[in-house]
Image 1 (cartoon, rainbow, N blue to C red):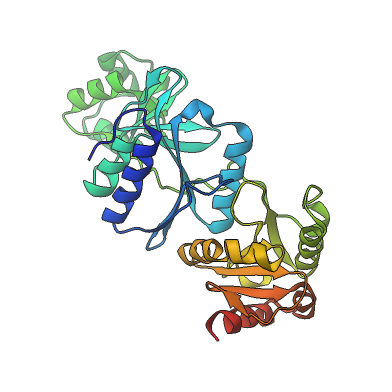
Image 2: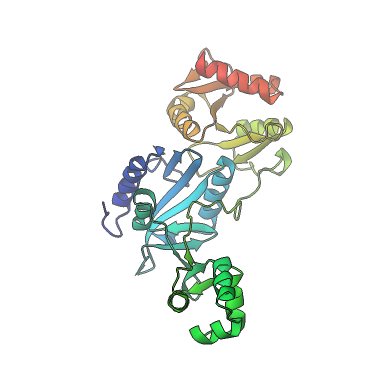
Length: 328
């Protein structure tokens, strides 16, 4: 199934269908505004935060940072699915990178997930390159008793360039083809677009005095300060259907808490979405309200009053409260 080029809505729908066909469990957020990602998808240990763009030039620094930070907090991988950059179509089978985020075409994602065909090429300043298996190149060179200089002369590059290839450096596609023809073996290595790169752009969650919640309401500021004082890593967001993500430093990042904050009417509008996000991210959903209500949960999201939050300073106690209100 190949979506029409440049049509974002069709690509979104096709990407969601593709993920389901590939065995992913997902929540679709593309109709929710604001949201820094469109699809949250999990298969086994792989969690993907996917943003679909018609033109990848629409990705800016702030959006990239928000997506990277959310992925880091969720222990997931951020992926941009795009069709064009400027007026140029992106090529299938090539991994692109912008602001430290991986960019793929729909076709590349489809080949990888459904057909088991990984991409072999990546875009970098200067052109399209492939990653050479440096150890394999060194072994075949030594087996054939060829010097670095001899191989360099055969393929038309410098001795130092061959040395860099053996150290794992990327190579121009034409050079790779010459090397493979010269030795009669395959030297290019596949790329894993879901490979975790670490928090390249993510802002590390901070203690409460360092969290920027100045633009938030008083409830959000007090909740952030309280959780931070209890030892939680917390990231406040303005570009997602939740208000914050939190993990506790004493629990080895075992449990993610997806947090919403506001009055009961706000909770009724957003609770189901928080629950869906938490379920895919394998965490918990919590909505903090100013005052205690008769309801203990809404659509699978636990309701907790701010005063109750203050009483549960032990993270285990808070998790027990959330679980009790979610399943009780």
